[in-house]
Length: 588
Image (cartoon, rainbow, N blue to C red; front, side, top):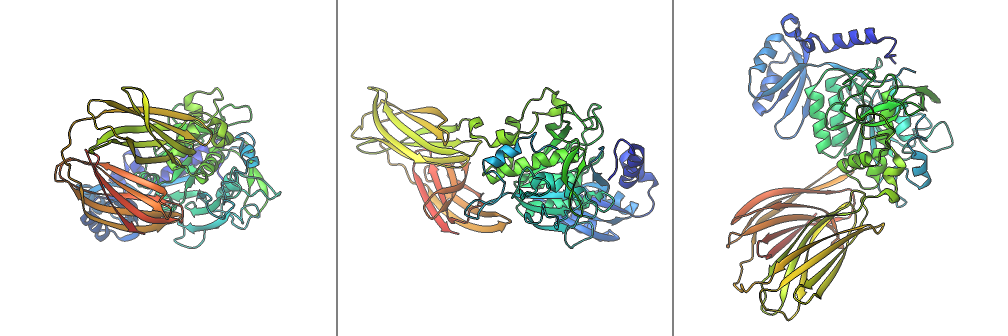
């Protein structure tokens, strides 16, 4: 491991040599020999061209759509020609990042992870054998034979040596893994998680360095496996579009990415990449006195702080040892993220929750971000935020006898503790309650349409108000109201039509995903919404997606997903502006 404060000059020289002179603005005119480049393409033609002119292609990374990155050996002339193509997004020499660690390393107690453990929060399987967070250490590998890691370790992949397992040959990844997920087995140390599913993407070699392409491939693999958290205790001073593409891809696919801010010292804006990318949580390091560690990078990109001085964790070959660095701080946050995602949070919700519950330790925002990560507070019921009414609307439904209305609603809870939605319909003329409804909900979001009826009333001009109260499992609640005036319009409204509806499914890691492709129409040209719901056998909504539409024809697609094994059908519902609906289902 490289001591940042002692060998800084040597390290910077090695980084400069590794990334090439192009990062300093001089490399393109001096480099005559073929070099390894990353070529970002935006079309199949560009991909073919990049492959054709390469002396050798070592890797193809697939992002969304037609965007790809080709890693290979190229002559300067080939790169110059590719740079002139409008469908080539970028070319860059395949530089390196290094393990960010040590200057001299405790922290589980300080972030109150042990309090979470006492409340049976381990990040691991539920009592029925389902669930459990999947945490990937994107580093130098993991010593999966270590007695404090072996029961949690699931699998890994070696991107440095193009295949094989991810056994650590440097020691850095093993130390990081222990902080995030060491077992509670009365031996050695204990992690922030103690039973999460542990994975390793080996992207750093035995010298602690890894190419941008290898690192991007490790991030891509983490996303494609459906893992929840990726920890990146590595970095460098140079921006890499290849690694940026990988972070964007993984974050959009649901991965919570956490990275060490760097050991460049508190000298202004010194946060390294990939921590500086917006898709990544940048973590600074603190000491036992809640001061910023003397080696820790600082800057506006810092999002959270965590212990990083004299941190005791697992070491290569067995046993424990102390290390210092933002590399040691980052896995505290990664483990906290794993705990939240084991409790049903998405990556974005977990990121917000970690920010909202962080402890202000009196440092500047460029030093601590939102504060020191607090695992117990993030998981504590007592600190749960109130649920939110995201939307509520009331639409009259034309009938001959009753005044009927559809209440369309959507609610959410950042803590994932939704419990019930209660609706009350009141006639504003006499303040009489006309109808009520109660719906059981769960998780972090729910939506629906509820019919409310003022029986026997077919007058006009009366105002009706629907009040919605959403309550979470801790009895915290929020409410909202919507009002509609009963009209005299008794014209028959046409019912919207589902012209086509197909569903395709796939499973990536722990996620089951279903994509609905649909086309709808309405003779009155008043299309309003199209909603896709993933239901279990009891018609409970596991996930939903909705699109606002208009006019007489509309088409599109939705993706819904679940980590439950209970998915049964996909339901499509089209609604027009008058509240008329048509639904259809497909088995999955």
